[in-house]
Image (tube, rainbow, N blue to C red; front, side, top):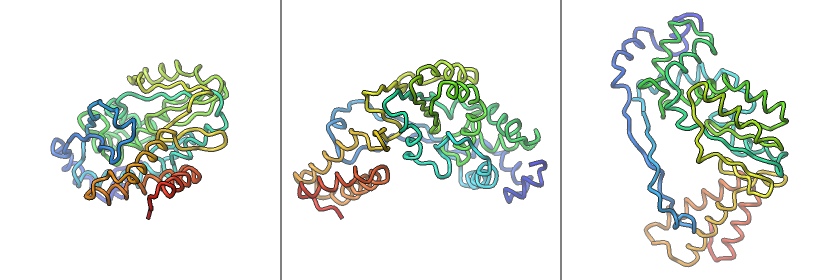
Length: 310
């Protein structure tokens, strides 16, 4: 985009309307907090959980701003070609395709690292860098787009533009990590703020990852860091690596068996039965999207337990 006229055309909004909108910047968001929804059927692990639910801050742009941000995403950001190693918040990117990149390295080492508080730590300076340096927008347009896509000096949770901007920024600083992975012969993927590396020397890139992200003011979440060896159940973003294909984690399978058993024992309250059954069928369908035979196992178990699924 070389001019404001081009920006007006892509967004279908006049520049004076954008400027007027930004003058009421403090009223453009309705922040709220949300917690993870309670699990509809308790398995053994769910019953043992005693931690309070995790609270997430959602910045929540108002409809007028969200509509403009949606047009920014569709008409500008969606046209940016992202690296092949990115799967989260990418068209066609799925959990299964993400994990498939690491199946050839099953039986070696899988390292998972997570960027701590990723969106809140992507500042307006980072976002301006994306618009001006990475995407080549003139300063005036880059400034305007930065104001439209940030809130309280950071990348907002809940804005349609945030996942794409986060991906573009990460790709722009990821070269040292990619080079280290190439030299070590590793497979590399990202799912938003989850970074996955697999191969015999996967541990060797951990310091490069930490240092590269630290240069931009980011920290890695130590509690979410995982080093999974060939004898471990190698899990990533809701899947696990099987010998020849992506499979469903054993814990998810156990939870579904517990849910089916609860139905078979008649311990689900009548008023919860419809919702419970819909949720159960939805989870089995999700398992089928990862590995059909795992879903078939659950259906056979249900039939053997006397539970009739729709």
